[in-house]
Length: 139
Image (cartoon, rainbow, N blue to C red; front, side, top):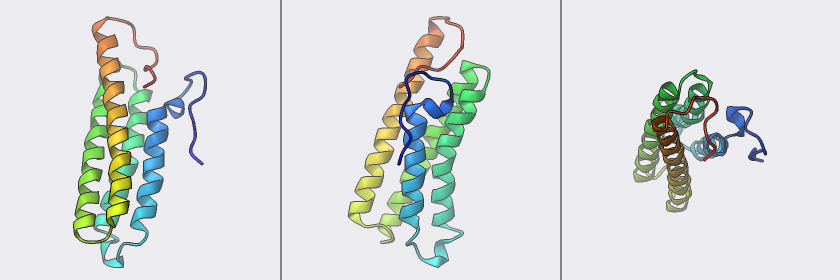
């Protein structure tokens, strides 16, 4: 069962975008469970690494001391998300994923991409307003 947003933001674990990224990791692992053994060190590894990179970068950026660094790590998370989408599309072309699976996976990546984009925009807006960095806004 996925973790859900609490009332107050005390940790990166309270961020809905991080929670959704964790959900995507779980879905990615399950989706690759049926891939051929020959892909263990190929697509399976690449998909799982890209997927886990997303929440890891959200968390690492949150833990940094500056808004600029946080934005940098969120950008890396977005890059990993696009990498993951590409691996999913390749997996479908190789018939490792069904059309139904790819639809679910790409819907998840689209939603997460919108959330990451929203968080980045909010951080950039609050940065230009010269407010001190305390906690990132919730998307």
